[in-house]
Length: 283
Image 1 (tube, one colour):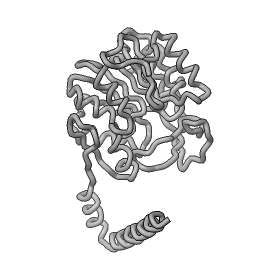
Image 2 (cartoon, rainbow, N blue to C red):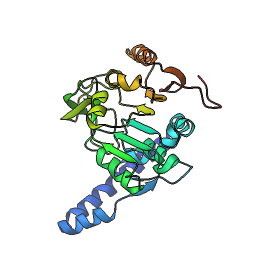
Image 3 (cartoon, one colour):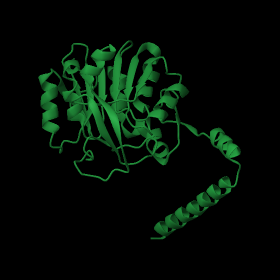
Image 4 (tube, one colour):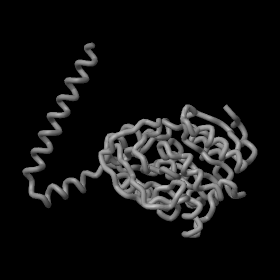
């Protein structure tokens, strides 16, 4: 109880300091205020141990969650470090601020090509900034495109408007657990079938794909069946809760295209077409 009271007192103090600071900045000339904001841009190192990765931090989500993504999803990091090879092509679908694209870049350097798909208008600029900040613009291609099972202009529903935020929804405002939500904003967004997008823009086929799109993984995969069945694809990591209604359909679709379940860690499901790397197996 004492700890809870101290926490509330601290939050109240922080709130008052923030209001005071905002009040002071509003008294400044606009040009000076803008200069201060530009000079005060916050950059922090994330928790990837192999090499330094730096990220722009403009929200509590980026500070509390995105900076700690390697520790949050060690299985994803292990997948990149175990399966990726020089010259591979990686599609990061639902890239957010680009954490795993940057890990793949730092692991392989310019010897890989990464296509990072992120449709959110608040988060996409952060992805681009992080790519430039880490000198990865030759290897990582940021794409502000949503993916689904049809090519159209579709409603994109936002749960929040924070950089690095997630749990948005394309089409119907339903979250990754199947619950309806009231969007704080909705914007029409260009959505592609991935197979069509790759053909139209002559992209190289991926050797690896990560699909983490907060609930429409099945639709994304349905729009990617040519790629799923291609000989170039060796592995795909799909974020999926086993309790979801479409979980079995996702598994069937991948199996039809020659992908078998390799391992499962929390909600990260790894499907592969080739022999397991040493030390990894189904779990």
